[in-house]
Length: 393
Length: 174
Image (cartoon, rainbow over the protein chains, first blue to last red):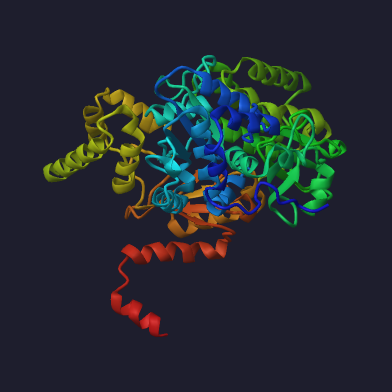
């Protein structure tokens, strides 16, 4: 099978926007609804529903925010899109702004991508020049501009309410939901927060139509997905595949056959063992924001769990107890296992703790931080119990 | 801190805050600008930012201490951040880390005595297909190997180090 070029297809700057501005706001949202697109950041919320909720909310102020805080370990497809396809992204943000009735779009760019800012600023300046931004966009009765705001190194700010807190000048601590940002977002105004890839796909859908988009994917997960594939394979990189593609096919594509596990969805995702490589990507089974890390047979699965848990201990915002206290406990448990000092009884306690964290944490970070630990301790039991540690040099 | 330095910092923060109309949502850009220029946000700077944005200094401290790219303690002129995420780990991050410590003669979390370099780990840089990756301030380096480490450091040392202009000219003719 080959890698498809779908949402990365050639695109003339402003073409989607021209089409959108010739339609009513409701018709733009209808096009997006017919495509069936769901958020590409990983959570998979239907984009048309989000835009529609924002559009119908009564408020003098509204915002559209592009979430370019690509922080999930193993994800780098937005890096490619932000550097290679800025014109499509800016079109997408403007289309979204028009659809929901916003006058300002904000790109929240992660601090690690600061080197991309000059390129994006130049693209914005060119658009203002060409009347694709500013007062009376393309001569229509629509004022819109886009501003870039930088993050400062916090994974949790990829969560939309934490991102909004950060934009408002606060610690990036997730809010309680509801109320959702579509009602009470940035400075209390209705706000649509969309992933980079989602906005690009929306611009393409406007130009090529919902049916073009639905040519790929499944009924529940329409369209294609950009995957960031790294780890133990010969051809790492960004790939575009239709939803519904199996892990086995993906491994063939990147020449990573022989892997003992694949981490799908980054540190917060699932660890899939080799016997389940028939599983398919999509919101019905393996949801992913695009991170696929191939784990070769030579790797220590406890090392994998330790790496992810160190990450979560560091990135937990500390607001809620299950996440703040749970992650260090799980990390300690992994280190006990590594030293061969963990009984099955204690492991079971830790697994229960992990499930409690999934159920009781406030935001997606805490709810998913135990995933890899639970998967690895379930699927790789024979590898992790009764370790005899190597003697010190 | 010298009184004149304080005055200029106070002035700069006032100008930055002005740009964001002294509104709370100017907090991040103002702090990021201070961090970039002074390599930290000092107690004095936090108090000034608070005064200019009309919030309590503790709130500014809360923000500075939350984000890993902001710091209350001075970082090096060049902040080196090595990606510690799984793919970079698989690609040989540990060897690069060791060589960075050797070349800089400091451990992770420390700053060189001359204030030129600070060394720390960071989470995924989004360069997983070209690991190991590291950042020096905003510059990104990929597929870094232990033998490349000293070349990278040399590039930055030359910007500030004792190397003379004559030496540079000599090298360009070589």
